Amino acid sequence: MATSKINYTVTDGNLFAAIAGADHVSSLLFDVTNSPSGGAIGTDGEIYQIFSLKEAEDLGIDGVIDPSAPTGVEYELGVVHKHISDFFAINPNGELYIGLADMSTDFTFLTTVQNVAQGRLRQQGIYTPQELFTDGSPYTVNHTAAIEAIAQADALNNKPYSVILHASVATVANGATDVEIGKIPTAIGSNKRVSVTIGQGNDALTKAIQNASANKGSVGAVGALIALVSLANVHESIGWVSKFNLASVITTIAFGFGGVLTDIDDNTLYTDLSSGQLNILDEYGYIFPHKYVGYAGTFASSEATLSSGDYRTIARNRAIDKSRRVVRTALLPTIQQPLYVDAATGQLSAGTIAQFKAIVHQQLQVMKANGEISGFSITIDPTQDVLTTDTVSVKYRLIPVGVAKQIEIEIGLARSI
Image 1 (cartoon, helix red, strand yellow):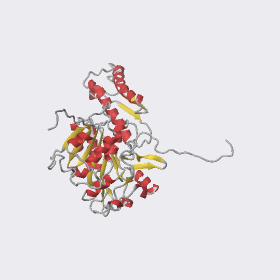
Image 2 (image 1 turned 135 degrees about the vertical axis):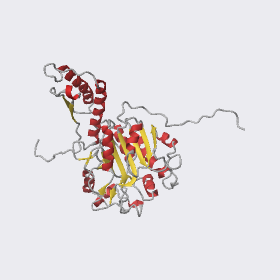
Image 3 (image 1 turned 90 degrees about the vertical axis):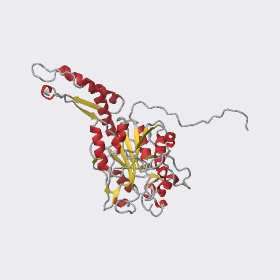
């Protein structure tokens, strides 16, 4: 028997630095049927709040240790672990809700997770093995309109958030054939709360996970992209090169489609596509890992939502959603307060107008001072008949912060300056 002693086991990964506010609070939802604890997942799904990869592993969410020899018994073949790992690699101080549920019929689990998080989620990512495209010429984009409807309903209930979707682009629904890039359609429509990501790393781990799945479903990069959104201030594009780099989790890039059913090494590489093809994918609204010639790193190609209107970027949606939350919170104490009117006209008194303007102004001025908006205006119609309607109508407009997506430079030679 050994001599008496006291043994210590030192653990790591238990500490995190809390981030102020809630703009960073995020979720990753996984369309699965099995529980990490074993057995089938319940009809209500499973939801966990975590602050580190270790906490996910403690739940039974394990990953592939050796990509050259995956065991095949890792939880969901390791795809859940990979996205959570990517999230915390990019934002180690993140607050993340993990949602595990069967979403094969609908994506209402978005609402469930937001309710469990008490409305604190600002962005939600979805990973599903369901196909993004249905066969045709061109293909049809699946899921986005249904997700938009759910997100819009939650926004009307004062729980707004943005969604980034990764659905499989390995095959097409109703065809069970490889996705062809020439048939990929525009995803842009009127879905301002939804973004779609395609593309992934070309590393051994990603290829091992994809190759292990029955339909060679693409892995994607939704965990990494949600991490970028959680790091960004509400007015910042996740494609900002000097601030947001994906190189810690994605070094070389593939797209997850193009011959993968035959051989995973036939995965269409980023370098296989021409600049024209990449431009088309960008113009069609897809977000993908991207590189710049002569500049080290991997970056988000854009921050596009599936809208061609005012809310065509994630940042614009996040900024106006933040204004909704802070203005609503500030105005809640005024609910059912007395409304004084001008005795001669029966319309809102100047003092009442000034009160409501001041409340809204204070909140928007803070956002402007923080650089989250460029400016704002507030209008309260003095002629509104509050004695009849019992309603005060307040209008405000935000001037958003722009983004330098394109920089035009004119150069030339001169005989003299």
